[in-house]
Length: 210
Image: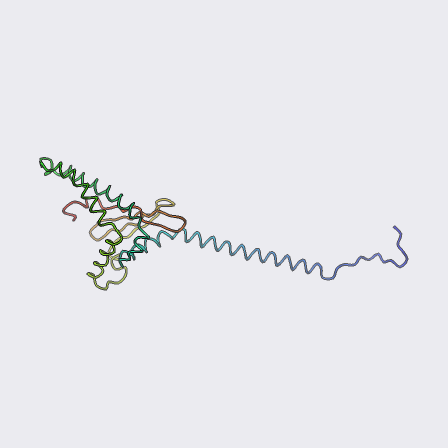
């Protein structure tokens, strides 16, 4: 195409266009890097909280038992579930002891004991395993022990805790007498745990262990 007289072949370039685009791109990359870092930090915090939450719940339970915090005990323990599991375990131990005790084999009242015993276990558990009763027991022990330093009782026992599955956690305490009580925690939601079962030592009903 022929040029008109006086027309130049040079094409004008917008001043500063390349610098503006580069600045915008650098800002975009920086913002994305910041958001990526924030997201990664949030994921790490969430994962850590998810993993340590049962350990926090177990420590909260120990503190609530020691101080007799009734409201906290009610939050951390599924009392209906715990009562049912304890009833089953105690009844099984009671019946096993009755059947293995030589003195009961020729005892005319053994049959009556087999019938009445389970009912007594039910009443004992229902009246004992409640937030109010556990709170009173804890407060009585605290008063009797004086001003014990926090953790002094735990210091005389062996405490073990571990996951058994993604949603179940065991916290066991073995006292100086060798008896082990295990609290089974069950996950509710992401970070909430409640005791759903308490495993008692075998032979706890034996006279020599009472």
